Image 1 (spheres, rainbow, N blue to C red):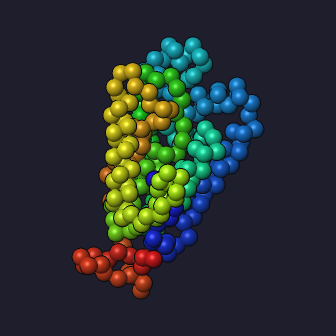
Image 2 (image 1 turned 60 degrees about the vertical axis):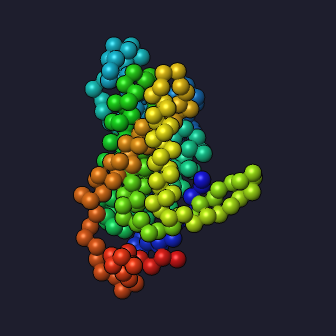
Image 3 (image 1 turned 45 degrees about the vertical axis):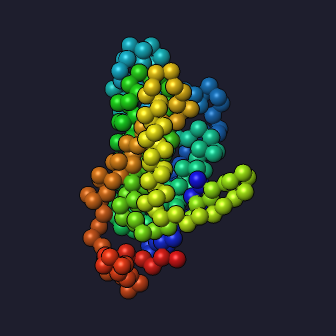
Length: 245
């Protein structure tokens, strides 16, 4: 399933979301300037390498400082390729503006970073001996999706579902789309814990941890809902906040 857009327009300019996308793109363009050997070293230094903290002797042997925890922040601004970058930024573009609307730019920034850090910690706890650097914004973006799941359950997500190479567009309720997404991440994460199974180079538990963190942290960061002349109550009597289209 490929999300195309949601059906709730934002009422404010999502400044923080734009800046996050810009930062990720600029850093990725910087990565492209590095030769392969330097890029690999770059990922090891700024990505999350769990064995760096659980096996300090190994970390010192390859030249990684063991008392540096900045990778739990810097890793979420690194990407392994164009598809990795575009997929993450597209998802942030779809869900980030509405969540920022409800939190405000500054709160949204801290929420995003907290979710990314939480995702990194969960990945570390579930892969403590891994010597592979983990990079990407998907853990933080999963947190945004978790917040969207709570804040906009009545939204629709226009989704592309390819069926035998024929594109089918379906408007799924946000709770259905995000629920299916989380279930696939959870099942894949559980499968990755089975000895001998290949995880496909994807940090499933970072996605799971980020999504759950987004749901838990969302009430702490959301602002009191302001009245809006375009708002109307839904059939259950709760104010949705923005007109759907």
